[in-house]
Length: 456
Image (tube, one colour):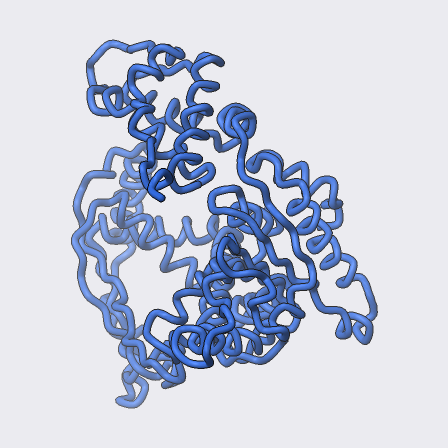
């Protein structure tokens, strides 16, 4: 985080998003201010809250991608929600605090994966030993959590082995270990015992594990599964990782990250803006949703199954096209919580060309990689890409402006025949150059005419 200056953040975002410099600068400053705040004394830190951002612009121009890539850049918990979800079931709508609960769940998964990566080497050793025992026919007796109440010692219940039996078993495990590491046993089927997921109970909008409520006293239910060795290895590694991970530490770190680094992207916020109606009907519902969202944006505490989570220092990025509604149609209190306004522009023909050539996740690279799996090697000429950009712009102007999302449909149509006929297998390699003429023949530009624009 220390090395991520605003200039570096913009440079990283430029790898995936073309143009929209104003929005990139705004999020880069917001991210750097988080680092600056973290260096201050605690008393001052508590007084400084993020300056939330409102992005205004049509669909498909990079609003969501900017927020998503920003979160990925610093491994921050991230969630995208459509504001319209909270009006789908009427005036009350979906519980808006679910946004924070879902964000916390994302943080827990993220932190758990990080902790699992740290213990993976040890987990692999333990999982391999369990797997070898299964392959060698050693079934370890599972102890009953209530045996101590009956005066039983599960350790004494295991059958005793002679020294000769132990040596034979050790040699057999060594042979199996070599076969296992060479992959010779990967497709062999074995039975393994796996834990069943404990039932969940909904309390106050949060899911609670019944086993957790009993303090872990309830015996874990298991079932036998027949799987191939390579699948069993992954299952056992995951189980051993879970045993090595301190779940309390995971929860504590996840809550801390959610509170201090969480990013909430509220899309389609213009759809819940009122239009100065008569004080009843849809406008009331939309204003109700705004007032429900307001507390979590202002700063409040939300109860989750991982404990209370404060929203005071989360970064909220809202976005909307605002074609019909205006920003001023939002209630003043919510407007005041998004002090930074940035406008994103519709994409030009040159923007589309750069999206297809300059970005790390360009569709040209994606489709080239996909089709190489079936021995089809694509090459795109510059004139072909410019023709694709022209057609994309024309379709956006004639119909709905879908921005860069229009390119996905364009490429599916362009490469439909190639994708369908690519056989792979023992077929020889095919080398195909996409030319301007190929684009014109496979993309029917005349279908873009939208007669609705000419009806008076």
